[in-house]
Image 1 (spheres, rainbow, N blue to C red):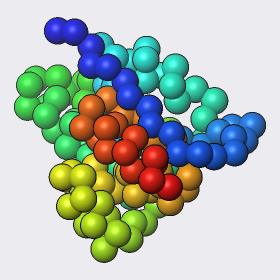
Image 2: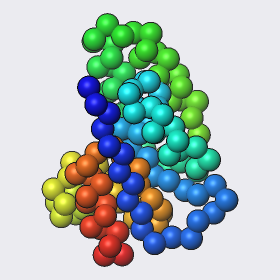
Image 3: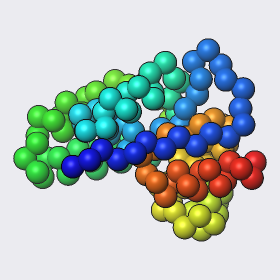
Amino acid sequence: MSAPRLHVAEPPAQYLVRPPLVVDCSVIAGSVFSEPWQATADAQIAGRELHAPSLLPYEITSVAVKKLRHGLGELAADGLRHASEMSIELHRIEEAAVAALAEQYRLSAYDAAYLWLAADLRCPLATFDEKLADAARAHFASL
């Protein structure tokens, strides 16, 4: 199985010493569940101030459940523990704005939440999801 391609879409922004980065579930799951793209994910998040919508823990838990159902209980437990120890600032979303983005770019509400947050914070969005990356590039170009 080949590793998926990491996409990083960035709005115009001033970068700080620890530049902010919105990370979606694919990036965190890749890191904490030792996926084939772990090294790419880890390199992208190193030294960054991580942000995500408050739905991230639920999405990570969903990945862990899939691991459990495939007989990977230890990997699931280790991944959940590692994810809970990560310093990720979780944010509430504006539901109406997220719904509008989901409709505009034909995204799930979950993916649109990451896009909305990155646009709201005016910081890059890291994802392995090509459709979300394409939407982010298009949206950031309009900011």
